[in-house]
Image: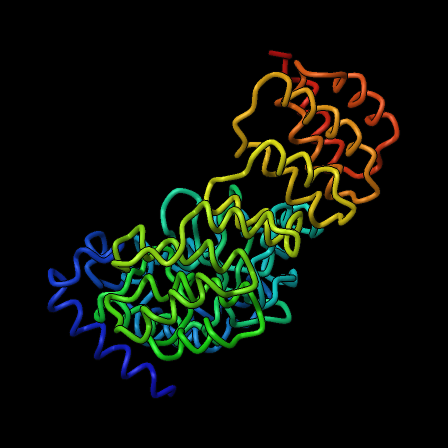
Length: 386
């Protein structure tokens, strides 16, 4: 038996006995660390036989030794019977899940992968609204977990290596007083580990996540404060600088390391302007302008064009600016990248009163072969101008 099971059982019992101490932690007031009775081996085996899979061993042992869901990250973990939800048809769990560890998958994630939506996965935590955590049962990352917003933000495979590591970290971080909302978004590790990532990791996405992870700690010392200020002023990626405004806004830092205007100025500087990093940083600090949007839509890099299309919601624009956006969306309906065509068609429904988008959509509908692009075109054409 995995020795972690004994540690988890002891930590869970101790937390349940003192649940009122932790009731401010996200979800604890709902479940109070209470788990359902464990499942018998025969019940789990019958589920596996019915769906043609073997559950990851760490999750399987949790079900048979600790409990069938209940107290855990989010509002509570569903039972095994409910974890598949309405999607749990024959073949759902045998479909390989394509998601791998690394940066968060971008918008358009669902359209980019054929097959059943979220195939090969089980829902193991509900964080409210459309936020959830899922366990990969089948696929290259079998046994790993990922967070996603079903209605928007794409999957992010959390860094915990398996279900038991994820669950035990949640217990530890609740007791420590960390922010455990949408658990798993914070990187594993304490103050020193997170500062090392912030200052030395080659991945800007991971450095930015380290910045947000430090902000989730219950406390941190002077050396960490100095590291946050250095990164906010010196990191070469504007997304990291933008993320480091959060500790100040949440009053975790008593000195403002950098202003939003300074981050915006850096994002528009010659060395980084009109890149994915620059646009995402401007979005984080809510400073995307019409000029930023139009420049992104005109970019030669398809990745920049793809991000820019999604930023139209973030821009406060007048009628003249909306005409300019509509003209660019019309051109992007013929973009070689199917993801950009799909995003442009989805955005077009908001601009039918500006420019000649309706005839452009109807023309594209006649020649388009991608089912998602056609779906967005049909959806846009059903919307009345106004």
